[in-house]
Image 1: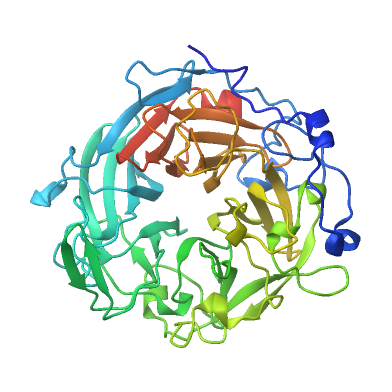
Image 2: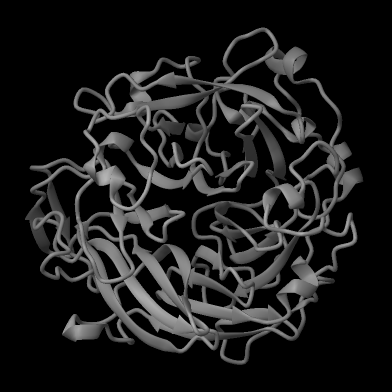
Length: 508
């Protein structure tokens, strides 16, 4: 049975007016701004935001101004896996513990997470996929000679390479890197590799214990690694990008800067920019050859009207949608975190923090970055407003950042909340990608039912898929360049899905 009209969460303006999201009095003078209009999922405004033409510079014509076609209602899946709009279909490409790796390497590992797709020609694609696993996992990434970073991280995370076609047929899968830990997201490079991120701060000598299995790390973790799709393996950490709980990253169009997110709390994480040394242009293998202190790694400061630094993004609310804020960058004192984690090397108020800096995706004009939520006591400064998700756009040239989508906090996020398969309340945006038509696709990691969302910067957000199997998050959405296939992961039970249909009708 179809659920809801266009599976669109309409934010009721009257309800919001009855229970406004207020700005703490200590911030009101700075944050007073234009009111947001309620236009679909989350709150968004039409003016002052990066246009879809900007978001996808390859377009030959601007998008239809305000004339996008809403996605049809989602239709329940008889197989109980994935609800999709009428006219769309999916194929399971890989499944944890069921599909097999090439070369006798074993079964497909678990905890599918961040992912990128590359065109392999003749209607075929290559996926590079993270597995967000600690050591001792039942379906960990096996140690394959030549791919191993830390021999002590047994049956832990890593990446696999998957070959498939437009129909989603599995044409093979093999291990590209192993012996890494909690490979969460990362980002594709312009030259066709994948930068995988470890979301951990484990150190050499730390012990691990999982289901009765024990071991000791032989190397430090919390790094970025370059992963190749052609079978080459180079498990060398890219130390110049820092050692911390990496989430995702994006490379700018000039190949001289990388923007990186940190998913951490106590204190909340940071958004970073790494700038290459003078005369260095990034390309295949360049990052792994750089010295650990090469370039400059710096943390973001959002600047207030009085010149002070916004201490946490949670002070901003729907009233600031579309407003550009100046950004400065302050260098990280000690990027390998020998004395203290990177985020603890800055005093409160010195940098702009955010709970759960997550997905990052770059365009020629700038980079999108997501904050998943901030609503628990430990997530927020004392006078900040809770929220269920933010999407930001940082403009390279202007060096400003603006809020383009805002999810007000109005959901029940208590632990143990059962899946609500008919719930149209969206929350917890995590991974993000830019479609070939310039709009965004977000993967939900919130409470209750998880969705894949189509989000128009400055416009509405629609559900384009729903997890009918359980309450597991979606991960790693990525579109093929030709717009034919959206690949996405369901982290538990570990599914890679290829979704096809009339994408251009609704996204073009």
